[in-house]
Every structure is written in C-alpha cells, then in structure tokens.
Image (cartoon, rainbow, N blue to C red; front, side):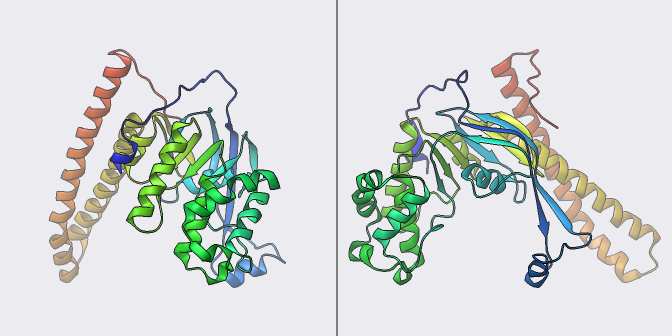
Length: 330
C-alpha cells in the first residue's frame, strides 16, 4: 500500500484551534449474554448478576482539524467502540463526546441501505441520514454513480446486488460526500485490483485536502504511512498517545512484556507438575513441551530488549538525553 501514501502532501495542523473530536472521561459498558434467548429475555426483565464488559474506560482525547490519527491495539481493546462513538452509532454511558463536522465512516459501508430501494434511491436515503439536502445530494449523485461503476444496476433494487456491489455503492457514497472527518478501518478498499487502486487514490486525495482522519489497522506500516500520530488502546484505556513510531514501539514493548510474564507463569506450572506429580504420563508430556516454552521465552526476551532499545533511541533522538517524555496514561 505504500505506493499510494508515501510522499503524501499534508496540511499544517493548528493544535491551538478548537478540536473537531473531543472525548472527556468517556465510558461505555456492554452487557454480555450467553445466547440470543438470554438477550431477548433481557428486554423484559433485567438479568441478575450480568456479565459486563467495559469497552471504554474513562477515555479522554482531543483531535484537531487536519490530523491523521491511528488507533492501535489488540482485538477487544476498544478501537471499534471508540470509532462507533465518533460516528454516532454508540453513545457513552458516562462522559461527553463532541464531534464537529460531517463524518464519513468506511466501517459498515452498507449501513442505512434499504434493500427494496434502487441504488440511486439509496444515495438519497444515505444522504438524508447524513444530513444532506436535496441540492447537496444532486451535486454528488453522478459522482457516486460514476465511482461505484455499477452500470444499469444503479437503478435496480439493492436486494439484487451482490455483497461486493453493495460495498462499492457504500464506499462511493462515503468518499464523495465531502466529509470533515473520515473514519477508516484496515479494509481500505473493495472489489477487484483496479477498483481497489481507485479507492486508495480517492482516500489519499481526501487526506490531502486536510480532512481529519481516524485510521484503524493491525498493520503498523500502514498506520505509519498515513498517520503522524497514533493512540495505543488496551482494555478500554488509552495507554499511550504520541508520534506513530513511538506509539508502535510502546505497544510492542508492552505486548512482549505481557507475553514474557505469561510464558514464565506457564513454565513455572510445568516445573511444579514435573516435581510434584505421580503421573508418569503427565510428567513426560510436561518435559516434552518445556523446551518449546523456554525457546519462545528466550525469543520474547530478545525482542523485548530490541524494542526497548529502539524506543530509547527514538526518544533520545527526538526529545534529547534527559527527556523522559512519559505520555503513558496508566
């Protein structure tokens, strides 16, 4: 993907201006259900001792116009909940969220479509949902039709579309509404190779106009190409917020530290089993897997030392010998 985003022209960000996205002590908690039946019953009767998951835990952040900000973290860390809160799909249980401007979300591209309406009618429907007037929708209508490349299908009911055709139409609408804020997940494009290239070029074009971007990906190289700033999330908390390279190294150091702790705990369990068990089969099994765990531990420790050194070098280069630059929030 680097050929699409390297040497990208960026507008200068004024961080003294009012932020276009502001989270102030935001919390969001979900109730987890064991089955659809349990979820249905909860509509009529509050469950006893429910299992709760706090997806966002006192999150505070500010993002200014023109910033491109990456969101890093493992699955379940709160990335999707944060983005859905920005787009207005979710609402916080606590705290306040301020979003100033029209948001285009390249997340659930077909959300808001009516399958019984034609593709062209859905352009208007989606436009109304986004708060556009008839005149504003007319301005972008042909741009959307041309970009989606659906041919005569644009005037057919969406129920006749393949999933790929629906994604094309959703993508075409979202990138042509002239958003103030663009929310992108790592599925940057849909369709065949030519259409994917077209999608990526359009995203680059939007970013170069100074649109504020929130970008989520597990690919650190992608985040570094697009974003100058990144936020590392873990278990609903913002752990670190800073330059993308630094944020990625903080993430790697934290991840390897956790993996080392878990691996040491597992090795200790195996050693205890070997020394205390009377079951010869269990002892032999533990002895057989022990070398693998020790080898992985050694690998993690080597990588931790490497990432720690890279992080120290980055901070020394950017902040000087005596700068701590401790932006970790936990």
